[in-house]
Amino acid sequence: MQVKIEEQSKLGRIMHITVPAADVEERFNAKLTQMTKNVKIDGFRPGKAPQDVMKQRFGQQVLNELQEDLVNNFAPKAMVEHKVNPAGQPELKAEQAPAEGADYTFQLVYDIFPEIKPSGYDKLKLDKQVAETSDEMLEEGLKRIRGMVQTFSAKDGAAEMGDRVVFDGHGYKEGEDEPFEGGHLHGHKVTLGEKSLIPGFEEALVGLSVGEEKSFNVTFPDDYFPKEMASVKARFEVKVTEVLGADELDDTKLAEQLGAKDIDGLKEQVTARISKDIEEASRNALKKDLFDKLLDKNDFDLPERLVSSEFAALWGQQVQQLQQQGLPIEALGNVDEARAEYRQLAERRVKLGLLLAEIGIQEKIEVTEEEIQQSIDQQVAQAGAQGEQVRAYYNEPRNRQNLGGPLLEEKVVDWILEKATVSDKKVDAKELLQA
Image 1 (cartoon, rainbow, N blue to C red):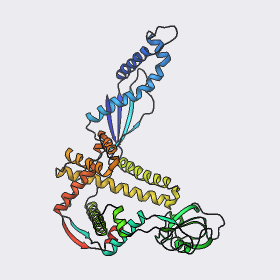
Image 2: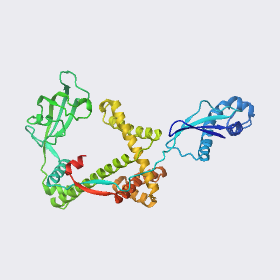
Image 3: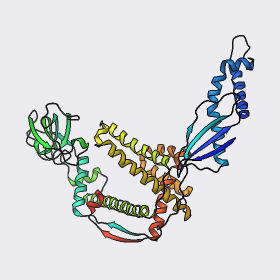
Image 4: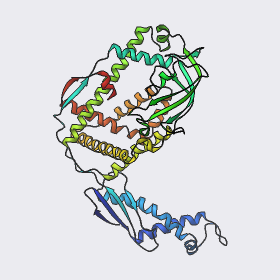
């Protein structure tokens, strides 16, 4: 086997691999012999067809199939012999199939990992955003919970704030006579006062009874999604089909439905949940500050194939999410600009991943099998009834290995934070949670 490595760019490489004709011939004959045992040809007993007849009938088919065999056998050997650790999946380039009696040459196009010398990570100065819960946040939390468990019953008369209204209708952009895409509403439900619809919509339904119709104008918010409807002035024509009033739900019943002893116990649960959310938001903000400073202090080239792979995964998730919502890709606004933003995010993720991994190597930070198992056990416990499905998923070695990256990241972050100077910075809890 002959191997030649060509440098395309700082990190891009092409490996030219030539398999000698003798190896091609040996593997060709072995495959043909194996095929002979299982092929029946008229005029010959099973497994007894002459080699020349088999070559005439199946030679080209075997040669076409031989390509995969040659690549799978010789590519790994070439990588090992030349101590190549590719960054991402190499791309196979083969201009033609193997030919009997001739050398076979194919190429592997790949990237190598950049040389990274992490610096400035052991004495960072960071700000940790801290916040406290408030009575207002507690009341909002209780209100959300009440809305989740609240039941409704049909009522006579006009709709009031707090009622649930079911309606049909159509939405039209200003000056247009045909409903806009997504503007057909049938059996749409809204609880008045929850502000789940665009400003002015719920208020327009107040006072309507079953069977009544109304036409009214609204303006979509500037930050509305999909972006094509942002700031759009529109007219809605609706007809109310049901008006339902909220059933009585006092504090005692509310607490009982949520497994709390009384309303005070429920408030403790809600406060604890808010505190945990604040703690998680605070850590995420601290990590972002840490990551930003790390990236400012460390610059290196990125393997294009790793970036492209990460971008494809991120973009694919976004497209899938739009499809599930029944929205076109244009809902993102300028698609080219959106792709550029996701490309930048992919570059950031790849760079951080490589940098944190290298810091882990330098500081001898590793993830143990015990830590991986603990993470799996936590996910199983959180999954409840689907716990065993989660455990079965991580019984697959590949899926189990995928846990290592996130766990290593957290351990490296914790190590850096221990060495850093971290100052508390008081902020508004709502702003922290919304960031």
